[in-house]
Length: 103
Image 1 (tube, helix red, strand yellow):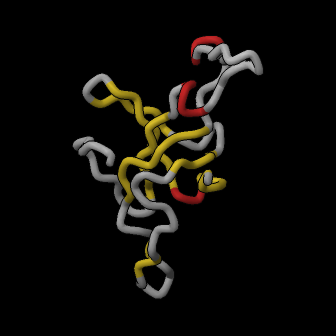
Image 2 (cartoon, helix red, strand yellow):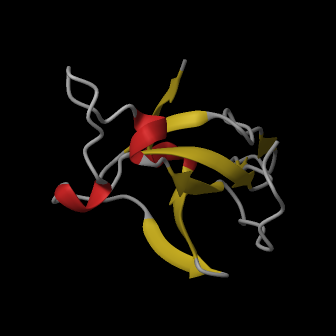
Image 3 (tube, one colour):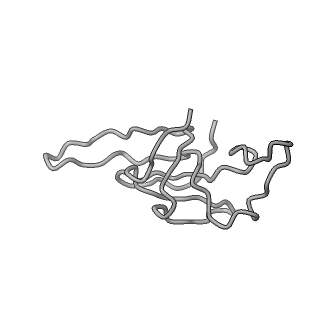
């Protein structure tokens, strides 16, 4: 299970830990892992480590979140904000920037 990270997102925001190259399966057909530093762009995949309470509708009702802690997700490349906490890198993004839950 995920460890407690010391931050709680507000509203419909989600905190995502970027997946490592091993977790993403970034390896060649011969089995060599491609290091994250070889990629020019930041990760678009991650594991949800915290979720907010949800988004308020125009009627004042709280709409539930569709993702949960532990989900591996695919998100928009330029949607998240990068933060570092205790030496770990995280992304904070709105649930609407999550494109899919990976299965």
